Length: 352
Ligand code: ASP
Image (cartoon, rainbow, N blue to C red; front, side, top):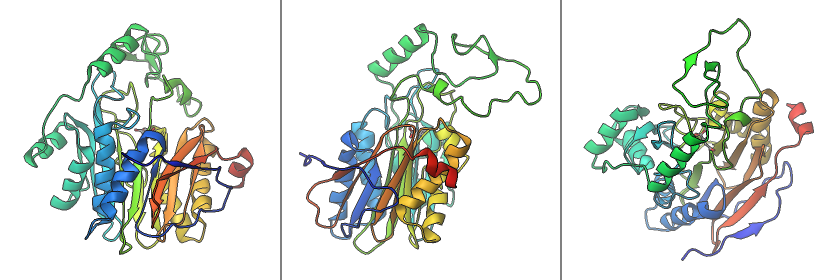
């Protein structure tokens, strides 16, 4: 049994919450995602615990439990009803990253990402060949679809594929499924903003676990695991496995984890930006607000949430487009706490 998470009131702008002490773990989202917080925290209490282990253990718990259905197997099926997984894990001392992108038929994406980090000189493996690497490394190959994911996907197709990610194609993607054909583009007619909401078929069309852990010796690691965006074009890779976007960690300053509209967020590297902000003296909350505001200025309809922690465990967050929550546990805390974060204010966005 996991102890019930304690709810913490709204985070005041710009102030970071104090560190509860080490070891420490923090991740995107509360509710079902606290399974991951608790699993990571328990692993940090073991003798010889490492931050990397904690991130792998925490994200793996979410992949197994599927948290709210947006991590692990059976969630966010693509247009062809297949679930594919994105994950990354990063070590804050060496800055090494292991990642898998669009990986098929293997459940434990963060586990495979860890193998990429530890047993190759690469940073990322993708698609079917990431699957082959996983199998070579002893991971089981299984179908990631569930009856529920197939049924939901078939119903989505019957209702005309609302919220798909196609643009500039015929038949009209807002009312029809494919196959699609491209429509020649006149110069300057490229959609640049205002398109995000159209690709959100439901409240849970995207979500992700991103986690940062600091072990008792002060070592930091970060990681992300997600099944991406529902109804994605097959082959789509989101921000989750991109270092600096899904998550980022540098033991000199701290760590960051993100969730939200990945197709846009990966163009801005919000976690890299947040850590540079920390390095330049901002508090974790200011660092997060600045990183989110930079994206919002260009994409006012962006849904995003990022958590930022400095290397002592002081933490904060910022969000846009939704009420975001994050969970943390550290020091002697006997239960995970969940913090609610309201979207950044428009006035703040103008300052950056
Ligand atoms: N960022 C994820 C993606 O776009 C989804 C999410 O975090 O909500 O793949």
